Length: 95
Image 1: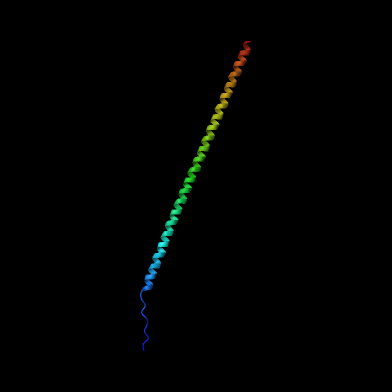
Image 2 (image 1 turned 45 degrees about the horizontal axis):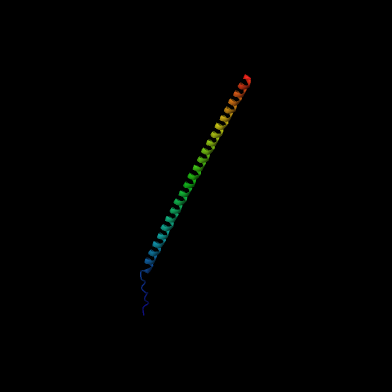
């Protein structure tokens, strides 16, 4: 009797090919997810930075406007008081 080797079919190469396809698909999916997450994070950071910069600009503008208004009010009050003092002194000098 002769020892005959069983015939091995070509299933392992096909299974290996399927494994490679699955691994490549998973890697592509993970890469796409990572890219999407990075893009979303960068977009959120840019939006937050823009909002913070706008808030800082608004705060600076408000502070400048308040300072200008306070200076104008102080100048107007000083001028009015000076005019009143001059008028009162002039009036009393006529008496």
